[in-house]
Structure formats: structure tokens, C-alpha cells
Image (cartoon, rainbow, N blue to C red; front, side):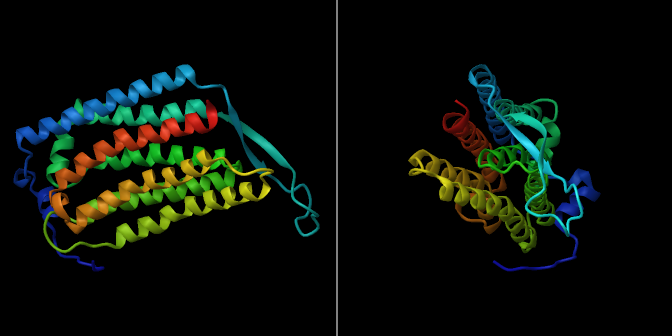
Length: 277
């Protein structure tokens, strides 16, 4: 793996300048992707509807602390105000609905655009969806661990969106041919660490304040959520290292669909069984 800065024209740029030279997906591959996206859309939609039907009205606040006097003279911490409350069940259902919407869109009205993008080893729809859905989920998880401050939550959201956009840049920067520029991937990983630093900080604080041993399911959720989130990064790494079946970009795209179906559904129901049941 090497870091490069290559300003020479790429195959992707050539395709953008001359759309007639764009490669196309064979019919069987396009059919498999469409079927996979439709299945993912249906499962996500069904999960969100079931979740809405059985979730409680469990709420958490979003807070802010404003100094009421000269900060240099303030003793202790500023008073905390509740700005609004968030019904966690609605947030988790929205996470699944976003996934369902985008999977359905690329399988229907945006199908041709999606297939042209995949043939050029790009899928902007994925990154747009992730920037909304994964950010929503990471913010909800952060809140469930006790971080309600608006500033911290905005920081977590911003870092996660940056991570996703670096993933998108990784695809745009690297075409089917030529050396791989790993800077976007590495920068995305660094941005993606920020939410987990916040999560681990609050989790450790919760452990220190616990009156009794933390249940095993809490540990399992934290570890599994971390693994599930990072499966997507591993998939992209394998794509651009051209390892095994990942030498074909379309295999990685199919893996993204499977991860969306399995990992996101697992995340959703782990939150339910662990916190808002």
C-alpha cells in the first residue's frame, strides 16, 4: 500500500469527458444488483414498520450549557438547559427508512444512473445515504451512552459525515486503472475515530459510576456495533487492495448491499433489545 499524489488524467476523468466511452454492466450483473437492492429495500422497510409498532416512547434530551456570568468568575459548571427531546424509537426507524429509500431508488427510478456509476467503479448514492443514515445511528448511540450536549453531538455528526465523504472521495480519486491514492481512505479513518473516542469516553465513565457489574449484553453491543460499523471500511479496503474476489469492484458493491441488509438490521435490533424495548 502506497500513498501517491497523481494529477495525471484517469480513466474516470476520460469517461466523464466522453460518456460514450463508459463501460456498461452485463445484464446478469445488473439484474443481480437490482434484485439485491430491492430485497434490501423491502427488509429495511419492514424492519422500520415493525420497529415503529413495538418501540416505546423512550426519550432522551439534547442539552446545552450557557454561562450566566463572566466565565472567568464562574464557579463550577454552567447550568444545563434542555433544548429538545428525541424519541429514540423514531430515530432508529428513520435510520432504516433512509436505507430502504435509497436501495429502492437505485433499483427503480435511478437504476440507469446507478448502473453507469457502478460500471465506472463509483456509487455516489451509497455515500449520500451513509452520510445521513450512519450519522443518525452514531448520534443515537452516543446519546444512549449519556452524551446529550448539543456541541458534542454536532461534533460527532460532523466527524462521521467527513468520514463518509472521504469514502466517496476515495472512489472518485481512484479509477479502474492506475495506482491507488490511499490518502482519502486514511483521512476518513482518522475522522471516523472521533465519534468512537467520544463513545469510549462516556462508556468508561458509565463503568466507573456503575453500582454493580455491567451486564454482558452491554459489552456485546458496544463491541458488535464497532465491528459492524467498521465492516464497511474493511470492504472498501479490500476493494482497493484488489484482494481475491474484491478485484472486481462489482463484488464489493454486492458486499455493500449485503452489509446494508445484515449489519444495519443487526444494529437496529441491538439498540432495541438493549435499550428501548
